[in-house]
Structures are given as structure tokens and as C-alpha cells.
Amino acid sequence: MMNLNEQKLCTKDELEELITWFEKYPCPKELQVDEATYMPDLRDTIARLAGQARICYENPKMQGCIILLKKIKKAIEEKA
Image 1: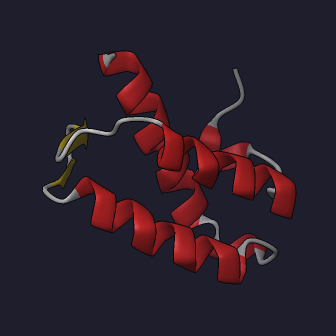
Image 2 (image 1 turned 90 degrees about the horizontal axis):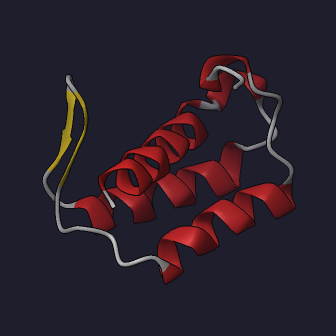
């Protein structure tokens, strides 16, 4: 499996597919993503990250929001 930090840039379609996953999946109200990352209002956080990702998905230096969305998705799937 490729490390999230080494992944290629998302295409617009890949980004929209990721965001759509969150819109369709019943996410918890809050989430402990990893040992250091807790999100008390997960839906709001996802909405803000998605907005930022749509603006900067083509900039390789601004991929943090997309990486975090992928980490959130992985954490949700692992807890399911």
C-alpha cells in the first residue's frame, strides 16, 4: 500500500469521488482519527476540508486537506 504522503496528486474526479463517499456514508458525530488527531464535529471538519481541497487540489504543496480526508475515511472504515 502506498504511503498517503507519497501519493500522486488527485484528479478532480478522484477528489469528487472521495467527497461523495463522505456524503453517502453515515459518519460518526466525532472521531479519533489517530493518536494525535481528534475531531469533535466530524461533519463540519469534512465540509471545510472538502472546500479547501476543491480550491487547491492541483497544488502539490497544498495536499494536507486531501491527505487528512483520506486518513479520516480510512479511520471510519477501520472502525466499521
